[in-house]
Length: 291
Length: 347
Image (spheres, rainbow over the protein chains, first blue to last red):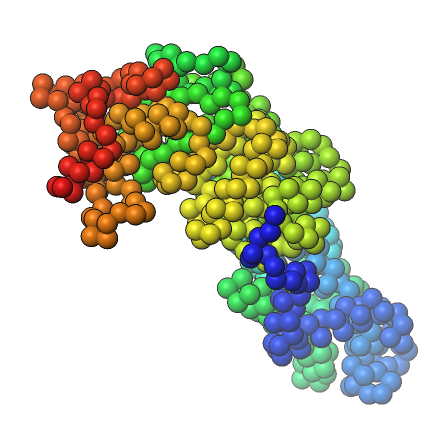
């Protein structure tokens, strides 16, 4: 049996991601952001090999030195190499950024998917719950948790993870509300698939674009929040090389040694900016309307 | 209750099914007392215009609509009433024993999964096949529905398929578990005329190969004519006439069926011959006339007012198993499609 329409040659299988990457590559700002992030991750992973001093190691006689060849970012008031601390600080920031974003994404996906898929009372309950969470300022929550559980990286991750999922839940819910009307979801039900399977295998991947974009931007936001909390003294404890903590320690010496504040502050700015740029680039690259 | 002439017990037996939607404007009686049987291996066509309740009936049998209210009726599948089954058991029947082909293949396939994956998923869920075995089954199925280079195509995404190929992929998915009944809801409406014929051909070939019954839902009498064993005509959510295809096409008794047949454009008709529409507009499913739903448009309305007062029951028309719901069956004896057409054109 022959089918006239099929006589053309079968072209090669082209994954959806390939065309997204092609579009992403054309966006110079997003590529710059991605390059910075890659460099940052590499630096964080290879920190012991690219720094000469440990992050908490004091150097005798080298206090509050301005940037020099020996200490590219200078030293702080107790003689620690600021470059080492900034590089090691990337580890802390990235760890907190990724870990708490993962928590937020898991919670947000779950709540958003359930709310959008089931609708009705479940939807109302979950959405009111997010309203309640939105009404609690995360800084107050962080201080409360830090008071109970002690100041640590872990409590920061938990606080930011538990407050970051709200927007994501709403985005996922909105996607589910529109996607569940589509015929392939009806078809999946007609195939006798379970609700969980339909939600997570048939609807969720189609809601992936906004989730990926939002999560990327969220990591940037979390790093910024972490810096703010560290600055306020609710974050990691003193010798830990956290950027926010370094800014806080450097603020007293702004007049004499501006580098103590500006360099870790710059690291925060650039990292957050890079995540935003990449998120922006992803939004354009993954936009299904452009495929 | 109507008795249907049948030797073996039917596969699917629907009795007095009423599926309503409660809306702000009132109760929409999408399906309003439909009864029929589908027998093993037959092609049962359901014909009706848009809004006649065909699709709602089909999805209700599948247990799909979320907002529908089943006011009455039973849907017996191999002796069990599907409407009473808990969702978890109903789910095991959906896809495995009763599968459905959707109207629009462009939207009924999930855009993010490879076609082969989507087909194989059926076998993995319902038959517990491994990923590998399911992949082989998917290729087998694509091959069966006439998709060349099936192994290669299985790894492609729906957007890389043409409309006709997608509908064939959809059929492949529906038949993966060799269901006993395939419900095809306007399977060719979204396709080109040339592709329509191919898809129908595939559907009929498959039917013989996996020995399943087909419930073919369509508004196209032309599609029905060549393929169906039996035909049911629906109007305003009700069965107006049901019978074997030849009975229905050559000895139609219900005025609505006669009107439908008379309105078909004919090959070989004189060029200036006008089309003969059924006068009036389809009945609203919210304000259904108290008697026969078709009576405001009917040109055979009885003089004693029965048609506007009491709802006609299905009665035997010209042969056993040929039933029509009309008060004036006897008066319609001898009325043919040709005479309706002549009356309509005034010739």
